[in-house]
Length: 443
Image (cartoon, rainbow, N blue to C red; front, side, top):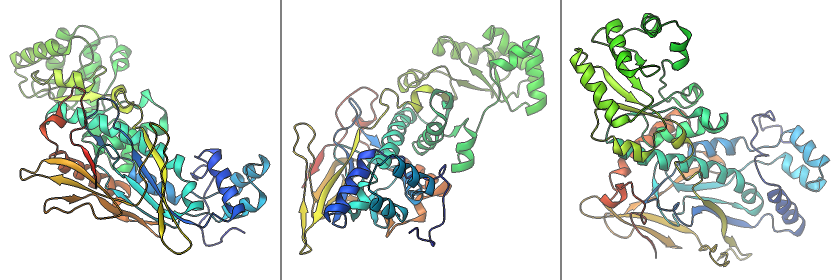
């Protein structure tokens, strides 16, 4: 019988079937053999950082907490499970009242992570926890991959603003999630309007080459854009000849034109030539934005160029070579009938994990630099005066803590990331492939 006190969801907004079939079949068997109610700890972590990466960035926390709120089965979804004989009728009845009512604790969104960092722990019974593996991993693996790439790009940009503009390079849902992750990791704005509406991210955008091609001349296109948007707009000057485009832009807009955008060519030499031309034309305050399939390596190569901002598309929303963070979700502890706990762990070669309840702290030296990720099993990790505890409550008894949610939670995650990025030792800021910036120490 469905609980009348639970507000109904539509099938379109429910997240309950964003899962794998075996999660429901395990639930079905657990309800049958009496193990469904055993208290358990499920942990989400990465065994290793993606190859060559020196640190990772936690992202997806706010999205997952909202997805857990909507992880309830609609009548239409239950009918599908019944018609497909996925689980027994008794389990269908149990699912009708499913709502996650356990605790969740873990790393704050925007935090850095390393090998084996216990990013999220679900404290609940087996039945409620086993259902969430796929949903939790799909959110964290993608969002953290994007945030990790975006953070490296932010470091490479050395304080110059970056705009995310990669929506057309991924699916429409991932585009919104990826935009949020990039913003948390330091990007200043996005072209994606839904991300702006949903998460409070600043949006930007002016015109594409199609606007210039629509008009008989480049001058007509520029004049029309300026009439609509004012002289503070950015004009795309590389549809035809860049030198002529810059000359036309300043002749039409005057020396107080907001900016020009370059989307092709050898960017270092082209940006230098455009800067010289703008200065010669008296447009000394006109900004230069570059786009054109930028990666963190291309951005780093432009460090000495007269570039004022960057627009990044494909590479950031696809994780810049690492489309997933490689995280896993494992049962680490189960409670015994007498109330004691048993640590459990997988022993498969190359795919094992450490059981037990984890605590974690970032070890910080006298200069404010991180020196280790301390992971404690069944005890407190922060034992030295400058150790920074890493675990915070995310959800209590099925209720998400509001500070992690919505636009405010997204801004808080962005601010937190900016702070913790300062703790990275110098080797963690390098663009070249290497070992994790700090070791993970189990104690």
